[in-house]
Length: 259
Ligand SMILES: NC(=O)C1=CN([C@@H]2O[C@H](COP(=O)(O)OP(=O)(O)OC[C@H]3O[C@@H](n4cnc5c(N)ncnc54)[C@H](OP(=O)(O)O)[C@@H]3O)[C@@H](O)[C@H]2O)C=CC1
Ligand SMILES: O=C(O)C1=N[C@H](C(=O)O)C[C@H](O)C1
Image (cartoon, rainbow, N blue to C red):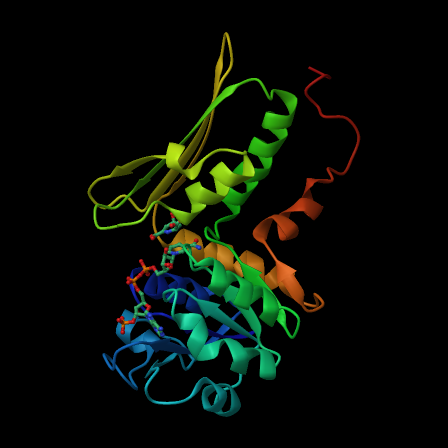
């Protein structure tokens, strides 16, 4: 699958390195805001051998329409910023390119725009693209249904410079019917991303916790997403939509009861 990345910052670089290693994807290009490293290649920048072009472009160099025409891809992956969609959204839909947006904090208007684009192409949005956190979110919803009386706390930890409350924590809180103002945030050092959902039962505590150890974790999530979006009809998808089919366990018995 030919892919392009919008954004070549902290996460874009890590995701690009994972995609270069994968045989499932062929990194055609990355687009960034500035002209830094323009026309260099991602393999060269990362110092890895690769037959994949991975050319670095500035958004000033081409219109997205020209980019998709000259260097066609099957999917565009967004790790830029809120404003990235403005550059590539319409052109991606015009060219039938799948959009995988990982932007964590969209304004409502931009999210509506993303939904509108899903009428014309496959769109997936995930504020946290790791399989782990999306599994946790499904588990938390099930636990809340089983025990609606528990006290719930959402705690998120990130690197010192992250200004906003994590988009992941906001989705978790909203999904569990909590106010986003109740989210506890920790900012320290270079923490990549930790999310914990604490269920306070009367005589026990359940902690559902996920930690992104390195930003390459988001690259693994992208590989899962593009693999499972293949062949999907146009529409709007979340990581949960892609994970739920795996919740049908095959085979007999749980093994637990058999001792
Ligand atoms: N869904 C998920 O799992 C995750 C989501 N994120 C989200 O990804 C986004 C990026 O995070 P991070 O890598 O830390 O941010 P950085 O600031 O490190 O990198 C942002 C990159 O995007 C580029 N960029 C910004 N705006 C535009 C634009 N309009 N068009 C093209 N390129 C643009 C910048 O270009 P330049 O370098 O030239 O300035 C830079 O390369 C954030 O929203 C973050 O919350 C992050 C991790 C995981
Ligand atoms: O900015 C980041 O780095 C991250 N942002 C996402 C968020 O805001 O939820 C996801 C991840 O925790 C890392």
